[in-house]
Image (cartoon, rainbow, N blue to C red):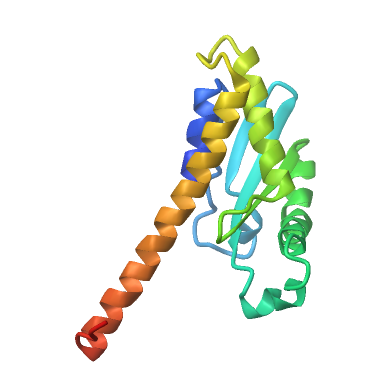
Length: 169
């Protein structure tokens, strides 16, 4: 959710109307088929969904010898799940996949490029250098992910200390 919120913040900075897409009440089967966010680019409505994947997760070990392919598989899975939702509403869809180690899928990078180019052309944005803005967005997304990883490791250590007592190093 932090990466989604950050992406929405980038969109607002670029002068793009964007929001988290509201979930249906009750989390039924249909609400799980809804994307995370919606954006109004100059070329129309776009929906997006963020996924963070760990390359060493047992379900992705099949891609271990082709490191970049597991993000491609994540993008494909998101497209299968959410593209019908988007096309039924006359919109496009962006699957935003990121590795837990910080690698962005090609689709995610292209999405950030689109935001940066829009920012430079928009009269609602103060961005004058889209390359610098693109670099800032990539660095911020990766930094946010690393902070979340550090928080999870720290929480795991705290929880294990509570359960098993202090373990010295």
